[in-house]
Structure formats: C-alpha cells, structure tokens
Image (cartoon, rainbow, N blue to C red; front, side, top):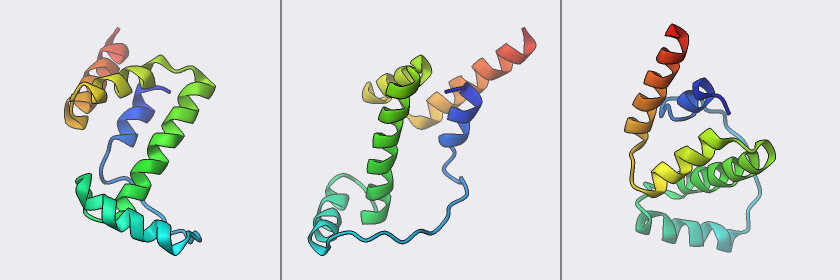
Length: 98
C-alpha cells in the first residue's frame, strides 16, 4: 500500500457512509460490554476497529505490503497514529523532492 493511501487511512476525519448489517443480538451485547473495557466509546467504533484490523491483515497478506507490516509493527510497539502520520508525510515529501 502506498504511503499516500496509508496517510489518508490514518485521518480521523475520513468520510463515512451508513450501512445496515444484521448481527445476532448476543454479539451486539458482547460488543457493548467489551468496547469500554478496550477503551472504545461504544460498540460501533469497536466493530470498525475489528473490521479495519481484519481488512488490513487480508490486504497485507494479499499484497505483501511491507509498509503496512511496518506500520502494524510500530503500532504494536506503542507508536501513535500521529507520529506514524508525520513520518509518512515526511517520507512522502522526501520522495517528491528526490
């Protein structure tokens, strides 16, 4: 995945769309119970996080993208999205000026 695409994905203000999905009630209750324990404001952000994690893992596996692997590793080591975004911006800017 290219640095520009990753930078956009780290933007907290990305455009959103509404969807409807059928999920068993007990799963929703579990999500509502677990979300605050994991630091989420509600179950919907938790569902988005789960979906994003799974999607990134699948894309990484399908594309063999080392940048995504690096970003995931940095996050596991506690590097914030803000710092990763700044680093991506610097790398992108350097690439344009080379």
